[in-house]
Image (cartoon, rainbow, N blue to C red):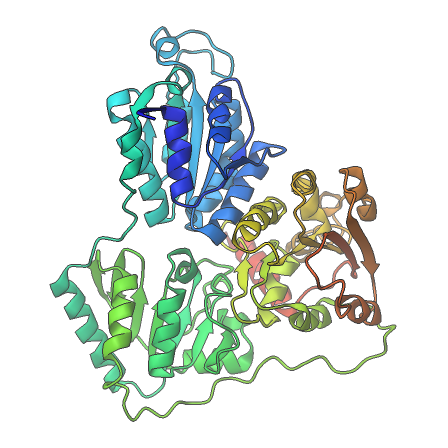
Length: 563
């Protein structure tokens, strides 16, 4: 094969970086491109229910595999996906957004085409996406097309941000030399400047040497930019107490003896709050300091000795070192820090969240009890996905097993996100390990935004656990404002009919309302096997919520009233 079509080149390149599932919807400006997917062994087209869900699914897939690809059509398709793409941008998730656009000649003639605004401007949607993309490209010249595709894939992977790639419909069958595929895309990071890196290391070691009770705080970008291994090595080398933020949950092995819990400012458990805030040195890995990630910006460090490790810079106290990437700094720091911490006496980490006290099996379920008890259900390697609302806050008091991954959209907070993300995560899990469990906790209100994607799960015989928290409406919104307002209510659904409605053949339905029913179901050996799709409806009181969400809602309501 001496030549290859441009369309096939794109999918061959994606396959080379282990992106095997393509999300999106067909449209007349991308149909000929989609034909090329089936020419590449091992590739598959997910076929989503709508573009927003597809963007959410691509986000969930990328959080597990490192990057993903969504394909939409010009105008109507790409705009429907943009809320999901914006969330990926905000939360540092690498999604390549490929858009089939009108042919070069149609654009040149400014034809009044469908899906356009009717004004001859074919660049307007591209310009919209530019604000929520790390970089963009619209192909116009076959001589540079391959290099542009490679650049877009590399940028998506390395920066962990969305990238926009527009391809005119007449170019999909243009030919390229097949030998271009023989040179892999270089996905390696550019090394740090040696002098700047040495200066950073020396400054950190000086702070460590003077510190008496330092801590490590791991946040979202430790996972997004793939430094979980390096963070673990730093913990092992120093034996400093280690904590995560809500967005960073899963970035540290919670079974590690030096793990101390989740820090959320004033919303933290008292012993966690004290341990972090009384520290005289904080080594912060991959911080994303949003309001819900910090307890409404309630971090109260007593020290100014804070080192921030980021993907593209390092900050030590008030000094910023641009371009000094955390991956290399952490690797080097772990190798040289042993002499500096020699003689350090590890201080105790906070005790784990206490187990639930014994209660009658007929006790109605509550959020506090459920999230404590959920820890017993989780298994090593689980992918645990929690929706904005009670689930995203409740999961902070659950304990993850080793190698568990947490997905929760704490910063962007788009209601319904996880209904699509669970699909992408399930595809990714199947590609990595067909027996790996994917577990979703989603509210009854949130489910109504993205429920169609259950049909895609069934279509592909994916087997997630779908826990639907039925508390009769938008409880998080009711806690913030409008407890009895009609706009916070929803139409009740017959949740146990959903899998059947979407065509499932091999499935399970369960409804549980008491602690005894929870324990009986979740301790069942057959239930714990990743053998079929399951929907579990959990009946909860309307205004019941995790205690930290109740506190957050009060703060949010007060803040909104002041503005």
